[in-house]
Amino acid sequence: MAVSNTNNNNSSNSKFILALDDEIDIVTLIEQSLQNYEYSIFAFTDPVLALDHFNSNFKDCSLIISDIRMPGMTGYDFVKKVKRIKTEVKVILMTAFEINDIELDRCLPDIKIDFFLQKPFSIQQLKYMVEKTLQLKV
Amino acid sequence: MEQGIVITGSRNDILEHINQAEYGAHYLLIHPGLRVLREIYSSYVKTQLQHKNEIVFILPHYETADSVRKVLSEGFGAEPNRINIRKYENEGSLIIIDSIKGHFGSDDLTTFVKQLVKKAEGSGKKGVSMFADGGSFFHFKKLQELVEHEMSMPSKFDMNLKRFCVLDRKDFDILEEEQRQKLVKHHGKGLTVVKSE
Image 1 (cartoon, rainbow over the protein chains, first blue to last red):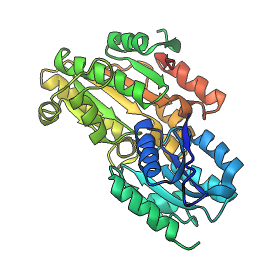
Image 2: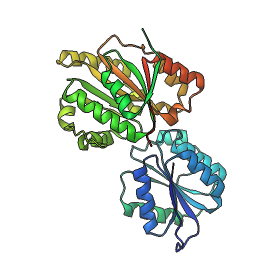
Image 3: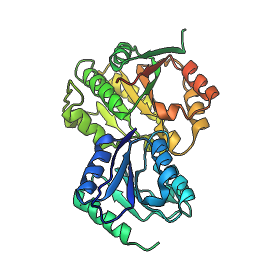
Image 4: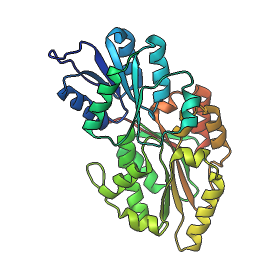
């Protein structure tokens, strides 16, 4: 399910952020929080729809924020697929579970994740991480 | 013995089948998402703990053990079912372990469940109800292992255990048709919750 698209005209950046989480409450929180900071956001609960959207609009996507454990497609697989389309897209993976380095190396070898966001997180933490990630050089 | 019966219905229809399950039941529960699953288990778990004198064992995958605790303690859905989590966990009637740890951890899950049933019988409980989310097999792409794991268990247990193998519809649809058929046929019942509009 595609939650919504918030494309603020007064955004200082014409590029958008794609947010993906199977829990609608979380993806809505991310969407509304970043919308308040004038980011352009496309929010999804379904990885397949998110991937379709990314595939059609990847040129304008600057950042992916994705959950890891999702039915149908894990966040790892989602990131692998978007990186195949656009290597330089920045990625924040979020999870409520412990981040296991062994699992990470096995699931995402050779793929760069810019940041991990531990749930639950505050709006300030989210904003800070998005700002930091977007400032990173490719 | 009849097995492989497929029942498709609303959340309430399926909850009714789960509530009526008898000891030995090994059912497959396919649901359309976490919200519906939470509504089902929060209702069922409350009944089993408060009125059926059972031990309940939950292995969640798409939410943390703490999230399950929150759902149970605060209630969920239109009819909140609040449970005193601390009391039941302290007395050992409620056990929540992450599905990855449960299925792929160092302890053998089958042995643990057998011990749990014995513990239930020895402590005056009627038996054990178990919700095991198979999402961890999809997480590690061990789909054939999931089928083999299920096939290694009987379609009907000869102990006081009701096991509900939980799969999200999106995960179930990833399986090959033959794997889906095997799973459905092997379980006593395949319960599919349709998404309500």
